[in-house]
Image (cartoon, rainbow, N blue to C red):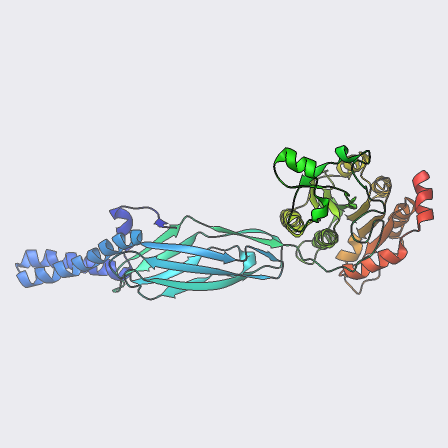
Length: 437
C-alpha cells in the first residue's frame, strides 16, 4: 500500500512544528530589520533562518510519496483468547534517506491499545519491520488499519502525518470445547444403521458409475462406461447414509441478560460452536439453525469438506448477534418441514408457550436441549435461588415432549453437561411412544 492524503503546499506548511514556525518567524523578522537598517549580513542570517524550515518541508513533501508500507496478519482467524501477530513493513523507495518515522496502526479497543513505533532514518532503498500481537476475549470480526505514518525531518522543523488506505480483517472465533463421543440418536461415526447398497440392483447396465479416484480398487472399474466416456470409471457400489444433526441456537435478545465474554449468550454461542465442530469431526451432516429460521449447512465428509464446512459455520457464529424476535416460530417452521436426525438446542429464557412450541419441534431422532437460566446467570454466586423458579417447569415440559433437557447454571462445563445428557437420554421405547403420541 502506498501513502496518500491531502497534498499541496498548504498541507505541507501546516505540518511545520513549533521549532519550524519559530525559525520562519525569526527569519522574516531578521530580513525586515535588515531591510530597515540596511544590514546585509543580518539579511543573510534572516534568509537562512527562513529557508531552513521551508527546505525541510519541501524535502518531507517529496518523501511522503516515496514511503510504502504493507501489513501481514498471521493467522487471520483465531479462537477467542488466542493471539495473532501483525507484521508491519515500511520501505523507502526514494533516493534520499527518510527522517524519523513514527508508526501508529489503528486497532479496535477490544484488541488492546493502539501500537506505536518510532523508527530511525531509513536509508535509500531500505526497509524496516516491526510487529505486535493482538488478542481478544470476545468473538467478532475486527478491522486492523489503516496505518498512519508520521514523518519528521532530522532538524525537527516539520512533521507530516499520512494514512495508508489498506486494512486487514481479523476474525475471532467462538471458543470450542472438546466433547466426548456419545450416542444420542444416530450412529457414533455419523452413519445411520442402514446403508443404501448398490444404487441399482437390476443389472450391470443400471450401475451408476463415477470417475476414478486415486486409491480406488481396480476391480471396481466399469469397462463399458470407461469406453463410453473415454476415461476410467468405477462402480459406485455403495453410498452410506450420513447421519444428520441440527444445532439450534436461540439468539433472542429478550432471552438473555448481561454481556461480555462471561455472559449467558456467549456461553450458548460457544456451546453451539463446540457441538458443530464435534459432530462434523465425526462425519455428521450438520445444519446450524437460528430462532429466526436462518440456516447454514455443512457436510462432515472428507478432510477438505469438513474443514470448509467448519470454517463457514465458525465464521457465521463469530459474528452472530442478538435478534429482535419474540419467539422461535422461524425455527419451528423450518423443522416442521421434516428433518430426521439429532437435534441439539441452546435456548435462553422460555415462557410456557415457548417451551410448548420447542417441545413440538422434536422429530424422529434424539433431541437435546440446554436451557440457560437467566436468574442463575445474573444473580451473585452466593445468592439463594428462588424457590418457585420457572426453569424446572420448562424442563419438565420439554422432557414430556421427548427431549433430554438440562438447565445450564452459571459457568457450567459443556463437557460435563454433554455426558450428563448422554446418561439421561430416554430409551428407544420411550421415544417411540412419544413419537406415536
